[in-house]
Length: 465
Image 1 (cartoon, one colour):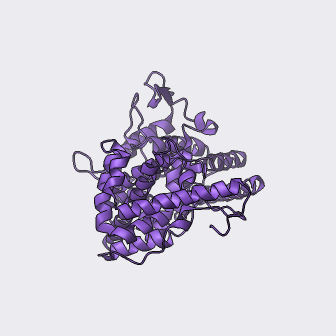
Image 2 (cartoon, helix red, strand yellow):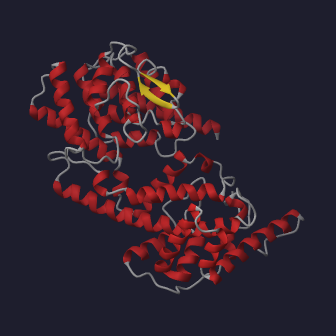
Image 3 (cartoon, one colour):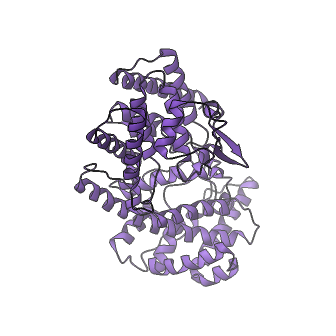
């Protein structure tokens, strides 16, 4: 496995280097081959960190796919820094930003003017992001993109003129996700245009209005490709990406069969809350003719559908894990999910799992809408792919939905959230649920325990499973 990972990293590094060389050649730049090789190595080392599941080398290659040279360069660097995922700034890249930022009580802060070096690249990045000395950098307000842009500018400084680097930086700035309009009513792309206009004047780039607009349109094009999974035609594919995002900020999930019921529930709950906050108009950007009105409306429509599916899907899974969590509290506080439901399937090994002891039900309450039918299919048949930490289908959620229907599930989910907040006890929540459902799931868990007991005694459990 380690050899395979090393081989893949080597392949990614070669691919990254080839893209760097191609882009700089297209821009008629002159790069030091040794410096480019070092850059490719650093990018891939950082993007293959232990917590990277979605923001990986494949992602940056996909974002740059079909783009011009500026877009390709921006794509390679745009996710280089991801503090929440990497649990800080990677040691490999921290040296490239330490002259510009410092850490104060656990937060990254831009140094004050007396500490900052006279650096034209840092000035361009700061002005395009609208960041100032002594500003506290926030993970949800451009921190990662800003630091990634600083590193990109410094790495490209030897190969390209400032005007081209500014265009790369503008693309990276546009990838700050899910931003609302400013207090004055400007969209993120409108604000970027205004800052580009200012930098154009200060740096004497000589861009006219048409060229300025073209820079912003390119940035919007790249930013929309960065989040294109939200508008996938298949909701199952969209959910696959969601499941890759979960372990990036919920690191316990990386350890299959050892994360707790509570930890898994919190991960789902955070994602469900995020999906309810999000609006399609916050996902995709527009500026001028990029994208066309027709394409933009298609993106918004598909994103709304995927969000609707994700909300109901995550809510259904939350309800099922709420029942498991409430039952787990009869044993203790930090019970592994595998203890309650059985270990994930492993190659060549048969294990007792809760799903083996749930009855195959016909539909007691049929779905009322196409959306409900789609979500039932997703929980029963599964997302597009299984993940390393979770199976792709949801047997317990399927059993609950088929037993009581979506309307009752929604009502119980509200009760489950009271249980999560601590305003409702575990037993009170279980009492509010359908008695047969709770008893069946309880008996299934007991059967998992019984099969473990038989296995420990060295007896065959195949007939039981």
